[in-house]
Amino acid sequence: MRDLGQKQADLIATGDMGSLLRMIAAKNQLIAALQSIELALAPYHEQDPDQRQWATAESRASCARQAESCQQLLGEVMELERQNEQNMIERRDHVAGQLQAAQAAGATRGAYQAHQLSKPQGPHHIPNSIVVPLPSASFSNPGQGQQLDLQSDA
Image (cartoon, rainbow, N blue to C red):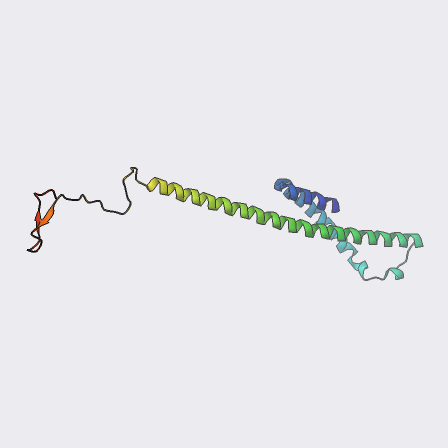
């Protein structure tokens, strides 16, 4: 389990998600096997080791060493799992940030392209304005009833 945890950390670091998922599936099978062993040993957890019958004092000491070694390995595995989970969270957040940046860039590009396509071609067009030619006319008799003189060029 410890070796698999270290392999998992390597796969997280390289971003090889396909291999990571396959390795996690295999690891889950091992965890299920360990859980069944733990369930079979459950009745013995409540017993005091000093009250058990041991074939020899050496077998009792060997069992105690193995139990201590297992506890140490379990601690290492749990720490690796915690680190791997944190690394996966960081990778997930990094990828999410990249996706958001890509989406924003795509939206910006789409808006820019739409704007470029909606712009009329030609150098003299001003959007949302009405172009009215100026008449070459002037008002004559400015004080008397505003008449338009269409004959003059002034």
